[in-house]
Image (tube, rainbow, N blue to C red; front, side, top):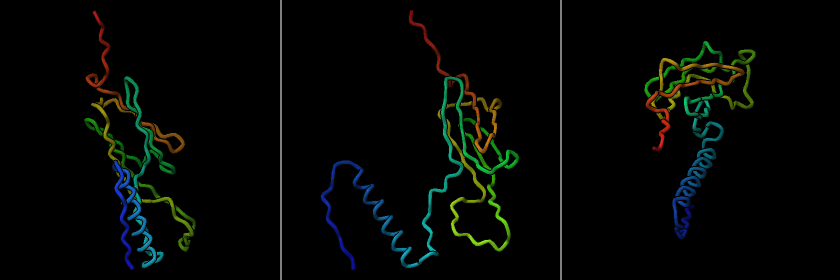
Amino acid sequence: MIVRRFNIPTVGWRSAFEDLERTRRDMDRMFHHVLGRAYRPETAGVFPLINLTENKDNYFVRAELPGLKAEGLNISATGRNLILSGERKISFKGDDANYHRRERGAGSFNRIIALPGDIEVDQVEAGLVDGVLTVTIPKAEAAKPKQITVK
């Protein structure tokens, strides 16, 4: 049975996005009901999670990479982009293991992070400590703020 609701539109975009989100949840529920456990809704799948900050001289990218070793990472920088790539492997004991819950994804990743300004590509430094990658990216001279003296 199909039921159609008539809502009085409200001002702003919020109601449109709420309707889209409600429709997505309804579709997920319907597919789960029809396909059962075989249905798995798509998630954003963004890995690694990052924070991008800056001060007057540098940009800083901090990425969470639990369980990865420095040898398994590829980091490159061009113009205004930082590229992180690698592969996360999840190991488990025994070949006959059955998962009861699987929330940690495994596989290759490639993340391109657009930076707000030009960078000094040959001076980028990176370090991995306790599963947190910190990349220090010096700003190009043209991108640094200049102090102007008032005469």
